[in-house]
Length: 359
Image (cartoon, rainbow, N blue to C red; front, top):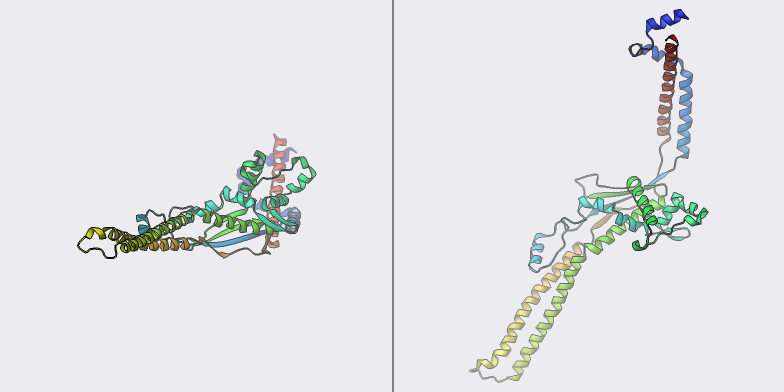
């Protein structure tokens, strides 16, 4: 025993320097434990195959589109409209700029509206948030515990704090894990909205309703100024038309009252001449209003379709699963590494035990 202890001291086996230098010895030792490594590899194969067959499939619904419209507004049109006090509603600096659209699509106000949209099921239409509860298993849990069940109100003002809290959790989960909005190529105007989930129907209808809400918001806000401009010009057109018709009638009436007016007395012709001037001015104003009305209608038509769909998801969606080769590769590498670590740790523990016994 003393001889062995002396030998250990001479070789200084427990020192870090000796362990570093004697790499070949460690490699030989590790390979001498090939049975443990083989068990690790077999375990990795079993784990990889099991993971491949028991993993949940994921489905990605992809919606591609481009942002169209008059970016920044036509300068010549904008100058003419400014003289009339009209707003052509150009896109410059709007929420629909390419720099803002990604944030806008992922905003809570839009996602929350999608939660309360409808999707078709085998038993009829169902709100997306209720369908999501079923996917997450909360509906089944609430069936077992009716007292804990929560009914979500469409009206924001009618919701409880608990409802808002659950919606917040769902929103963060969707933004962080399921929804992505990107523009991969700066030179291209194409943008992509992708939604990934284990339920392909949920993925498809979530994206469809999301883009529908974005388009609806645009029509309700972006086109508001243009519609107001058209309405104002149409009202002005009707007013000037009535004024022109009135002036023409008045001129005819005054001429009829003095059919044989004395040419030497111009005063008798003054009223009719005033009405003629009024009529001519009304005609000029009417002509300009008609031009500007057509301009406003043209601008409204140019802004009518902000989002042009390129492609949209169609059921069935492509199933996405980690390949068997990838599952096996990762699991075998991990279990083999763990086997080697365990072999090394066991030897270090044995060496440490001998050193302690010497001390």
